Length: 530
Image (cartoon, rainbow, N blue to C red; front, top):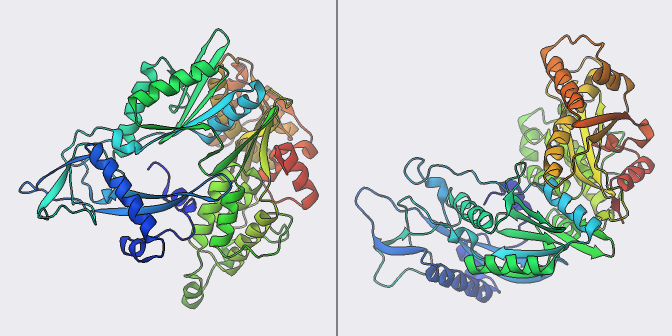
């Protein structure tokens, strides 16, 4: 899959079987056996492989079963899923595969489409490509051992010569995406130049958007006939399951109301709390203790201290939290970003900070990211920086957020790559990153007829003055390059730059921890509501 290992692990159920033997020894083994049989039959019907003798000089790649309990939007068990996965890590480049890259739709693009759904009351439907990777044809000659539990009698010396791609193959995602991409273009949709997994068709007031995330296909349209026609054609080309109106995607619950669309991950948060045994913890009102200054000085200093921390699932927890922060919760991104700095050197105080964040999430798990038809339809970005805030190397923090229809559609928190010599320099570095994102946004929305400059708001007057009028002699090359980049964006009217009062700086919480009152105001400004 194109998901990172961290995201895949984050979305895994609490107690799914890890091994084939475990699945067969559990009380619910019958359900897993049925799931394996369904998957095996689908593979056979798809002509995924041909049984043959292994040619001399070739080796057969092993395979395994992977198990996952599927849940609905409320977190209830929907079905048991078993997937046969080939151990692609043993493939040899140039023999078993060549190119492997496969894109997925950007989360920012998805949130933009949901904002448009709120603004224009677009219908949002979802389709799932059944055994998606198995629908891609492979050109390479690849052999696999027969699946556990399904070895043909008398055929133990036979192996599977793959005809179709299979989950786990390094090129599986790529061949599936290539095939789906060709089909969507053949149906008349245009591929976005700024997101290869976003497709659109606009004509005579009718709009159709398609977003692809591996095997999940989301369709946005203001015309039911147009939408249904596309679904019928996709179903005639691929094995697709029509899920109707979208209610859940990528672990995100989608809630429609009159004039609004809301996104939340309450079930995901509950799952995390159970997984890390924090479901009974007391709640707190902020993502981190604002009086606590985390640094590497808090890391273990002796082998004994390091050994004590070995069994702490710190990296797993941070990975789960990062997925949440990237999808629907910009209010925790600063904290998660900071915690990730200690993935290789975490100590007791770092772990306490992780648990503090879990307590905050327990008390705010119902928060949703809301887009409203009544919200501001103008895309506006905010850029901020916190100068020399890193205690270990005195690098500054950059943060930006873009708002549309009353909710955040894009956000970022990042430690700057070089040490800034002043607040103005740190703000300028942050502004440069925000301008890059604004340039991407301008390109994306211009495809749909929006040609106005993207407004960026900054709370540092000196930074704005330098960007508009010059008058600053850069002493380092990296500032000089950013200076010319921002000036170029202004001259080409890609952006317009305005001042915002510090109290109204929406990106403030992406560069530093906030006290409760300011945090609540900041959350509301980003469209995070209870």
